[in-house]
Length: 115
Length: 109
Image 1 (cartoon, rainbow over the protein chains, first blue to last red):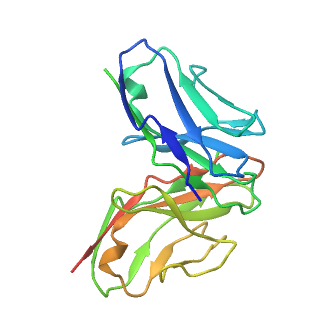
Image 2: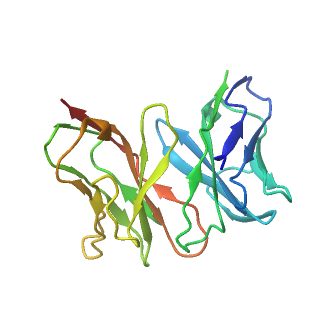
């Protein structure tokens, strides 16, 4: 079956703009989480959605937001972009999330460059 | 606060030599520990988790709660093991994964 799919793969934005990234989870997976990866901070948890509800949120400012649709597809939005938002944004999906032992599968990521 | 520490950014060993990638964690409860691997130009993928107590591609990892460690080991390294390895922790509740900064493993021929 198809893996986690993220679009777009690469994008360049200007400071102050906003961006929306999309994620299609593996079929049947209801939990979608987002991570930011940068050389300095590594992989950091942004938020997790389950059944269209945000279940958890990492330590990021309110400019970072997301949502999940009824088909489990998810989008994340970053408003008022800053240079420091340049990163690889990874989406991950699992059956139900939590600590039940579900395997978390990652997408290839969306490379965002803010200039 | 939970934290995962991978002390080595880079580890280089010769083919056939034993490999040990270190991972220490800080968490007050009973965490779930994972090792993820990212091969060149591939996505991040799960290598193994402590609750499964399995060996994948010859790698094993044992959770040592006393030393709060979850080191990854392989007795005989192969060139195809060259990759980035990330140790990750999942705490109680439904928090996301907390990752270490990763160790770049290079297996020399």
